[in-house]
Image 1: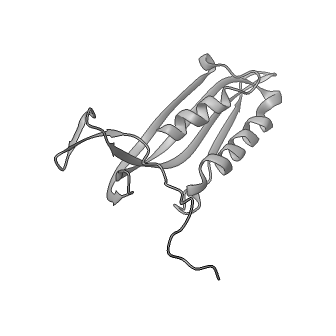
Image 2: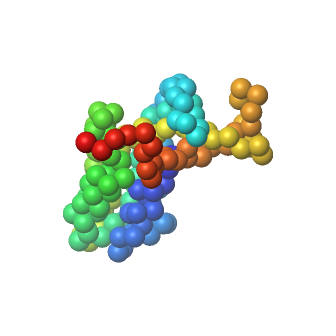
Image 3: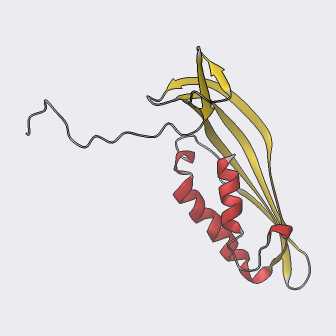
Length: 149
């Protein structure tokens, strides 16, 4: 639930939004098994869930800023959502009083569950120890055996 945590933390940078106003949780989670070799680790599955973020007593003056924050965050940090055909977020806004609103945001996320080898890791699989982590990507610095065209 890295994406939910990251989006919630991002929204807390908005002026007028504090931790005591916000509740964030995952709902309707579904695990799927993948077993994909990533080179330096394994994607053992994916976790698809509905992230729900509720903000009470949000200053009404920043409501559009809040919505823009969400759209820009998704565009930058959830680039897979178009490939995975995830729906657009749902937003409900209720007037709380003359100056504040209650906002509930629903966003469907799909995240990989990746394990990497670690002799001290808590997970046993295929005779090895593993931990949850990022497999990382190796970038080639040069290519041997190729001719320039």
